[in-house]
Image (tube, rainbow, N blue to C red; front, side, top):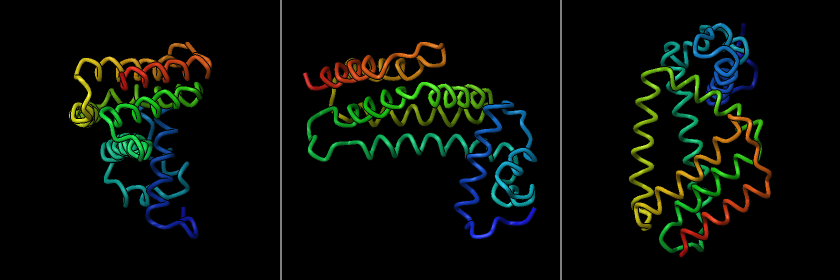
Length: 184
């Protein structure tokens, strides 16, 4: 299969990561590189040009997801919020607002569940968790309050995997209460 006309290196890489996410959601980590390449509209050789193999592709997929979440949180930090907890508040808003789309949340959680079976992925996730703990700890809130608020937001974001679809109003009320707790 030839290179897709007009697609640059980054666009091809993005297409491969998006295709890998779809394949992993549907088939787990045993999905083939051929499937990923086909869905991305590239040859297997084109895929291997960007990623040396399945392990590298899966790790890149995890790093991409983690970096996209971090970028969303950092972009959500309010410029006029200079008090302690501003990063925690952005984390809460992004995390809970993502749960409003229960179908998309279920898809993302399914992807994470499949990826978490790969040892190297677990290592990347643990490194990212440590980084978040450090960043959030430096945000100025008491450690116990920060842990409580973040755990509540993370829990709310995981509800759709169990079929518990809170309404947008319920999620907004929870979000607002958690935000209020960080300002007290």
